[in-house]
Image (cartoon, rainbow, N blue to C red):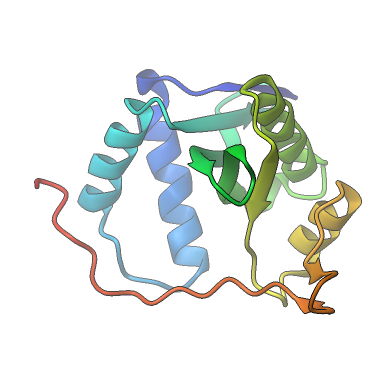
Length: 159
């Protein structure tokens, strides 16, 4: 297995994996064209990194990590926005290796924390995250941290 930061040349492979992820989630949007434009913007952004994993061939998994300053972290914070491994390549440690790679990248960027969210019924991902030290329980409030999102609309990417 080999993991590296993606370049613009990897955009078609990333698009194929993102579309597979979208289909796995049983969603019709964003469209292929919208994802293609988004991937191009993210690959050109200094605050977003795609990391891709290969197994002697084309990429079989990716993680998208975003970076920002957080007043709650008192410094830079990384957010793992996406993790996807092709179903045919699962159970080979690729997801865990991608997250470990992202954690090392966040450390090298000087981040003081890394955050993410996942569906509470996604047992495989939850297992990876807890094995690597992620915690969903707030010690102050003695409850699970829950990430909420309110979709407004998928804005035009030409703006």
